[in-house]
Length: 263
Image (tube, rainbow, N blue to C red):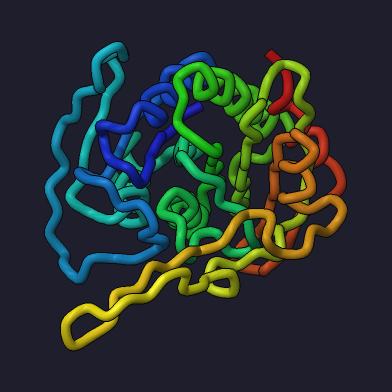
């Protein structure tokens, strides 16, 4: 299996390297990241047509043997270029993350660079997994990496490769070997619906404000949706065909999602 691992936080973020190292057990891996942090970029694009692809080195403590590159572009453009540059333009799977912060919702790629990079791959007909956790911690990331490797194997075994599907994975903080993984529906929460001004004060001839985007659990929780899974301590795996606006349910997706769980 030819796998591209991307992120939105740039090459200094440990999560992308942890994820890539875990996926080496599944297939060939190459890493592509933006040259700086683009958190919250969604599927935005820079209005230029010239980019530089440069070799990248991992942070201390990670294996430097993996082919890795940075591109001076937003996450979605990085993923799209990676799909053309990596493996002669023929990758089998794109995995984006590990993002520090959950990305639930029907259209997480609107505001999440992690999900935006994954969606760019899906737009090119390549299945993609976007992986998010509540925080960046090495031991949690290592467990998540093994879970993503199991998910990738299940996707290949159940003929999920070659399909234009987006698997949005949100992992609970207490994820361990006993945590189940559920196939879920999208959460109702939207970033802008929850946005509020928490503080305001005069600032010269204007007003300084502090904005809060709200909490993952602010919206209504529907049984079987992403927030329901996270509240129960389960991994949420939401599978969609974004072009059709379709949420996938039933088999083989229930079994594919369940494969994330374990050691």
